[in-house]
Image 1 (cartoon, rainbow, N blue to C red):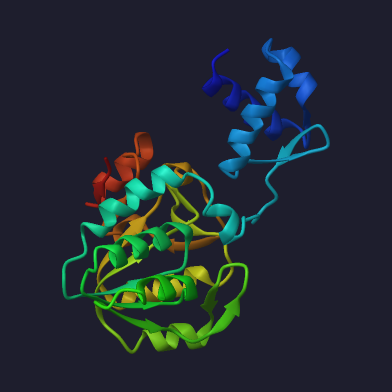
Image 2: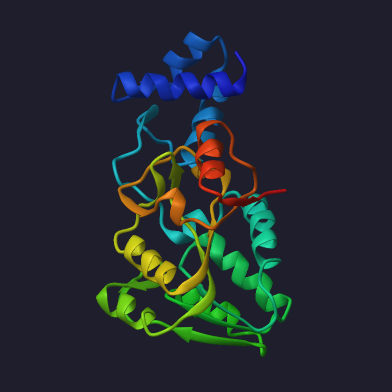
Length: 252
């Protein structure tokens, strides 16, 4: 049984029962326990399960890894994705950038390239990264501080954003499925929607590991997306929805 088939079977088993054991799956697949542990590690890094007690359990509803943990994952893919997004920013652009591990990479690339830009953000880390560039004007939104995300959210944040109009917003997300763009961190969806309302163009930076995932809070329908930037072009029903709604996709 090949790795993709094992991954599919592990997730299927977790739909049928609350916990699966490494030894049981190794016997079922005819592979070593170390192979199953590696499979579980792959799926855990994608947020599809949680390892515990000699096996794995389904990811708890609404579970979301903190920023510091997420930024250590899929580094190469995020660099590639953020590079494409950075190429869409022109000298003199005004942009809004929301908090997230992928948008942090975008901010670093813009700072390194010394792109002349005005950026409004709810992320303290993005503000500090872009603020290192003499060509960047950074505006930080106020709000309720979320230490695990190094970001602010809430009514004050959204009201503040409403006082600006920008060329484009660059937004991350926790999921992209046939339900649309969704978010897991409480308060993030409202901030993203506020940025969308104040932007001439909405650009979503979503890596392929989020394809097919649906989180609690809806951010945008397909007809509200202008651009999807990813490390891989989506396929199947997701690709159909994007095409039917005229969403431009940028991928390597």
